[in-house]
Image (cartoon, rainbow, N blue to C red; front, side, top):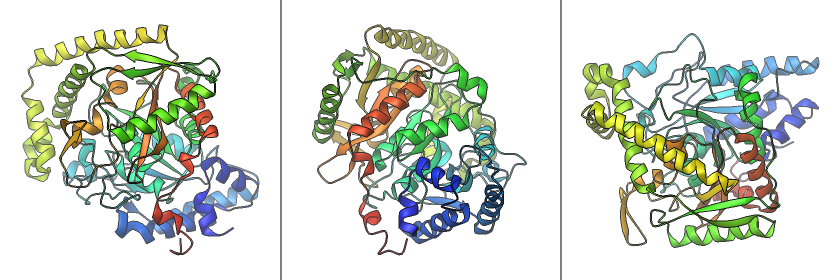
Length: 469
């Protein structure tokens, strides 16, 4: 099997071929590492990888496979890891020059340990927005990540390296973290799929935090089916049993399309979403409007909590290494230090009230639907945008809609649902009840059975064979 074919396979497809010995872990690793190194200068997706380490582990996995002993459900599957997950065998920089982020710990973070235990082959650490504190992936000690669909566009962040590595067909799966959209933003901007799990089901040991009451680790992949495989592998058995495994069928599914004056999106995104909604309706879903009151205010309150919690974590580091932060991240952290405790507590109080309001919508609907982002990936370096005559910063444009699921702790999945006028991907998000993670993934997978947007590739992938990948 040639390299181009190997790199086009999903996690599910790779797993089937590795288990039948049609492919070896070493063959897969060779294709992945060659592709990574070929595109690194162009896209800057990774901050660390070690060829010798990768091939040593691949050889170990091949030896097991030859005697019918598979390490787990992800045996031999190449996986990229966002650089805020501590890893025992390589540095963790968190996209920062701050020294605290550069140590090599003795153990993996809990999500990485779970994935390795299930046979995943860790390829390396992906680039990210510094300390996960931004949604563009333009601010990193390793330089900005570039979008495979157009290198002059942002990838979105903060898991931008993971999103770009998937879109560029470097890896079939990646690990990201999400505090206000950091999985879903780059997934949508790069034309791949991503899941923000329900808050509280994952073990966050060894995941360097941004804001404790929002942070969740989650899977990124090119298909929703693969998201489900990765989610199951990431979770301890007790957590899997706590989540509903009920499938969501489209027949008579009640979908609430989030609407209201606070949902402002570009014409091209609106048109793409309308087509996607029509697909769901034709398959039997019942779609109605679901107005979320105070959505814009909830976004402002989310920022209060985010900044306060981030500042609390960084208090000592700011004192000792103030000059090692980028200007933008340092400014946000210092602003967070000025938030009074009373404001933080009132913000958490509003959060409880707002979340209860959103949960009541599930008396009428099975899922909520909205565009993942209000715009396609903006040009790099453009900090101010205008959406339907409404001025907005690029940072706020990327996070305003995704913050809804983060603020309420609800699970959310994003999948490609079309393209804008310049051929850039558009993403659609589905939000479910607490614990409905597997149901959401099954619904997204059904949507992908009916559509082909997730199969599309950026130009640098279309000529994969010619490029020597």
